[in-house]
Image 1 (cartoon, helix red, strand yellow):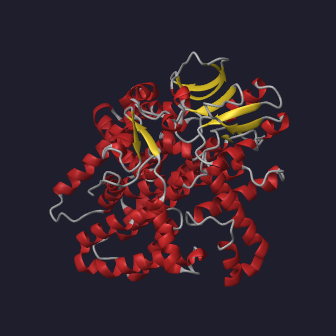
Image 2 (cartoon, rainbow, N blue to C red; image 1 turned 135 degrees about the horizontal axis):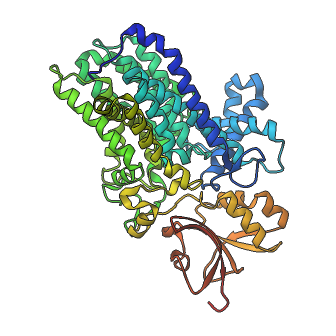
Length: 554
């Protein structure tokens, strides 16, 4: 990539000051996320955040199990027999590698030392700090990498844009695997971009060191298996047969770290690896509403991933990223040797997950959740594009006007992160007319239970009499309902939660979130003469979560 960079000496002198900016942005990110983490009145030192999502009980429960087991064994954990007892224990769930859940468990136990012991087995809110910290690290990583490649102005914008991507920002508030996966995925990709982008193929030592990061990414979630394909294509394109040895070292170390970091694999490598990979294809289908039609996850139209990405990035940031892509293409066209740069690898790493999810039979669901790791890579292109805009304004109107114009543009992109709080997973951009337009098109308004916010639960407990029964819908997994029942205020008032059965209601009260493919027909419409809305969470007049009261004789 052809860039007008400052001299090496000037760049080195600027590094400490630049690093301080990205550390400050990372600290601000952690502060902003940590201020809205509470899902059920669990902590006094954080504000109300998204409701508990379906996967969080698994992640926190498994993380707490791992951390407490390792703490109980102490140094004895080094013995293979101790590891066998932990990783073959009936309570251990090997549906995902352990790194992401271990971080969530570590977060839980750390916060528990300050917040005090609870009567509950674990508290979901405590585990959410892991994602908050991972997000802050991601902000720093994107800023620092972009500074090294393109300069300070674009780097500041790239790092700040992560806060303006509502779906990514929303996941930073959840005790889910998506944020640790995004962090280690991006770290593994950017390490190759930064340290392999040379005239000669990287040394074995350099390949092995970057391979460690690949292994850590593999230890988070199955999405990390997507990393090698773009790297292999790019490296062979760049160095031909000279790339084979570095690729072998990089991949070999990555696989070794993955194997060593997951003791569950040790005791039956072939069988357990087959079981792990088989889970991604052998589970029951999940259903998605897309342009008003209910699809099984394997049957969605090829364009689902592309549409979801394009409609969940603020339009201004999307335009900036298009300038960045255009810059990459022009630089490649003008390069006489047509040798791929590191930025091209970054672009291929962003593109490949989207291409994969267009292939027939590949499962995709839950909006952008399965390819959330492309958003930080997109942020780097956003920073590059914004730097191009800044240069354009500077040449025509001067630096002061350029700074003001680009700053105002960036500030306008934060409206989604501000107005949708804490229901960031329901964000749609102006390309659909916002959430209201997307809802009219038949897109999913919400899907994971986050719209049953802490504030809504507090209002529900005030509205419903003590010792009442509340019916819940949809129930995507019994463990989620069980943990929701542990909400302190519900326990204090003796309120019981049960699954909703529309044909045999056991209570007039129904609490639900608006995931239409799994809701009874009675609850799918926004209004009905068969029930009355008692409390609700809405964004842009679209209901996301509700407590309704069924009418007699419905």
